[in-house]
Image (cartoon, rainbow, N blue to C red; front, side, top):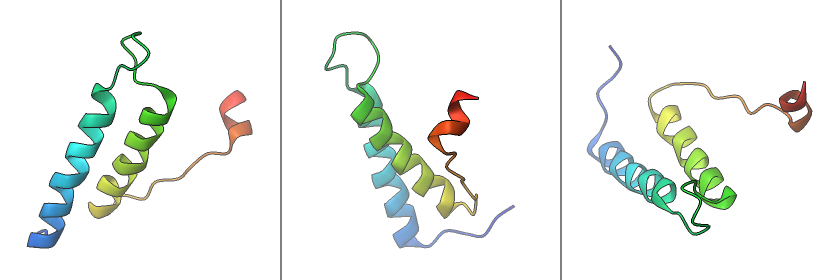
Amino acid sequence: MGRTLTDIEQKWLVDLGEKIRGALDCDANGTGLPCRTDRFYAVEHMVAYLTLHDYEVTKLSATADKE
C-alpha cells in the first residue's frame, strides 16, 4: 500500500477528478465522443492523477503510435 495523501493532495485529487469527468462528459460534436481537445485535457489531468499516486507515465512519440 502506498503512502497516505496529505489534505492538500486529497483536495487536488478531487479537483482533478472533477476536471477529468467534466472533459469526458462533453459531447459538443453530438457524436457521443468527447472532442479531441477535451480528450487531451482529460488525459493531461489523468497523468497528474496517476503521478500523485507515484506512477510514472511515458508519452510515446507520434511515430510510435503509427507502427
